[in-house]
Image (tube, rainbow, N blue to C red; front, side, top):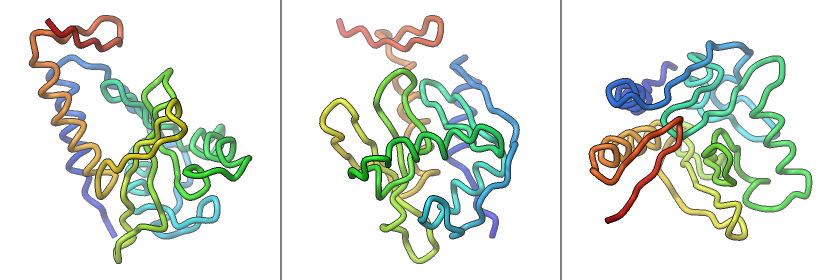
Length: 170
């Protein structure tokens, strides 16, 4: 089943138009198929489609962890976060973060819909691993983030210097 990633396309377009950081690494690994088990849980079909197109990316100020056969960051990060067995890490699959911050995005396999599409949560590692719902799918997350970036960069208070985003309220 081919899963369209319209939100990803929108996010890439916004980054290109606005001169925001944009780096997509070529696909470089054997990606689990939709529903195939990865770390004991069904793999999200949108993540499968994403990692079939690229192994990882930097899109604005969001990093998609590299998924590849050698040095699989998705595997390494999730195994490391699951060592103690604490939630929300034990029941989710981290696929990205805001670089240099303990702010993560993850899918939740146990909440998948009938097509296997998994919702996305935001995990704030600074606030006792507080969890907030983000979107109904990985691609809806990309669409939401593209709309956010489009609006924030249009604000006069926004500055972008050396891959650092800042919003300076007046």
